[in-house]
Image (cartoon, rainbow, N blue to C red; front, top):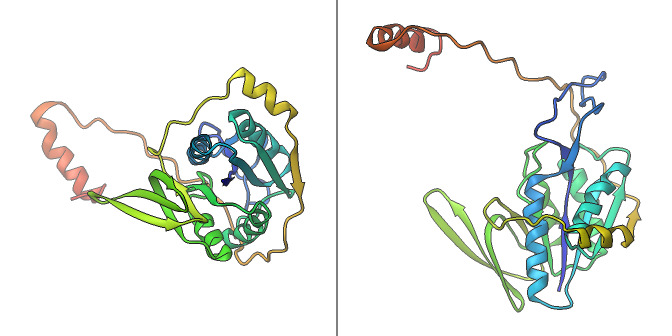
Length: 250
């Protein structure tokens, strides 16, 4: 079985984000970049499914600047067999343009299964995986929390409000992985050393016109300082007044 996993390089959740001088992008100076946390579940699931089917090949794919090779190398250290880096100075902010580039790259790997993280924590759109599925003509299911491959069928579960949905999809298909699907492994020393010897293939991006333009980028307003209104029962009327007149919560 061939499993292809799409990953993305994103700013760490602990990074202090500043708007760049152009007002439309972030200032990357001093910002630590990491593998998108949701993509860790996708990589781990690919490895688990491959371990159940001897001879399987797991290929990780990313689209972005040269520095994104670090995240690919990390996936190889986890146990992925191959890596493909579609290089660009910067990945587009346009989800459809990114999907077109990734779909073209994924097609070259002839996958039986394509996995994504449910969303990237920088854009939080959750669109690219489903767009790729449409472009490749494959069935898709988002937010998977349980997966079993049985021959040419993927049996997957996803959580909805108060219930679990169970689906069957023919292979090849595209799935996005949610938290709870598995517990991602940490690379061991053997994997790290082996990853240094693995070759990361590179490719130029397919042509994809950008249809979305970022007009401006700004940080959210700083939260107002907290206020102590008193203690005990005597503070209740004041609290209720503030909730009604200032917070408009009542």
